[in-house]
Image (cartoon, rainbow, N blue to C red; front, side, top):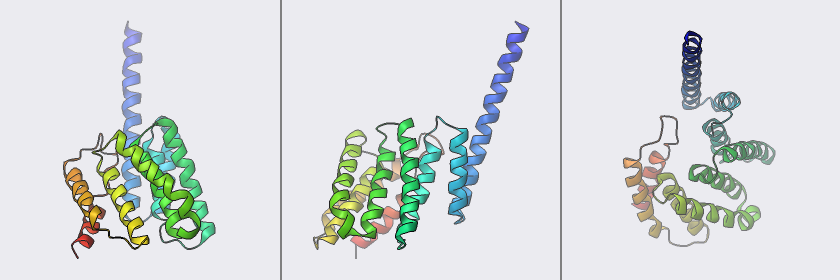
Length: 207
């Protein structure tokens, strides 16, 4: 009995220690990212992913960094390298958390990065995939603020590209902002981004 108590105490201590290392690592990675040290942050998220093989969040954030840094990149070789790495990380996250709307949004953003780079080349093949991802994510979690906002921003971008009126989508941006205001992430490390960007896009609606 005494030995069982000692083993149990050891396991609790080990689990607590592991969680502490995970939390410290995630906090450090977010700090690096916030300090514009994106490469270092991405590398740290990948290391955490290796230490937390059942957790979809570290590969999700490593992928997100590579995707967001790809917008505006004009070097195709560098773009392909970043987005290829991001795709591998999204695949890892998806394997751990299937039918996850947060990951679907990230996949849609990856395709959007290619369309933004060269709409004439990639728009015809990737635009339907983006629309399908947002439709599926909306079906699974219609009140997810990132799903609502990113779909609306995509719709606005598509309308703008074809010379159409973007104002019908402003109400979706307003709804997303309301959802952001009431959204509570499952843990401090679950996705909670997008509110500031939504406010910026809404300001363009008012001009």
